[in-house]
Length: 129
Image 1 (cartoon, rainbow, N blue to C red):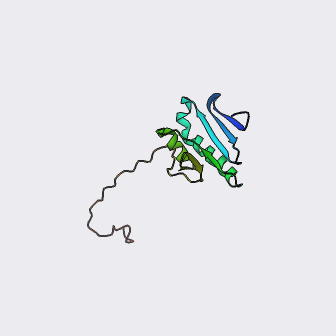
Image 2: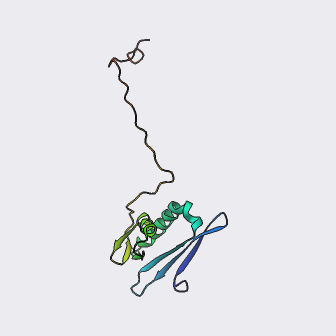
Image 3: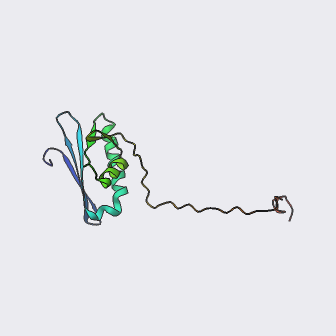
């Protein structure tokens, strides 16, 4: 596989996180293959964003990019969605838009309590003191 296409190794602070292959098939399409090490877990969102931007540039030139996700592989399914792939039978086709948003930190919303007041405008807001 690696002899037939392009490959990239992705490191963080000298540690190998992932290896990516982009392999042409007989129809002129490109198969996206990703091998991820456990150390990459903390960087999955960044890896998906990098893959998305790279694959989008390739797809913008008319190349069809696809991948395969093993049935039942929930992590692979989530990463495929985040990267911009949509399931199409046994293959997933890169469409450019993910179904989920990847955030660096979770957003926590606090409920705001409404304070009851007299309904009168404070003196400072009314121009007085």
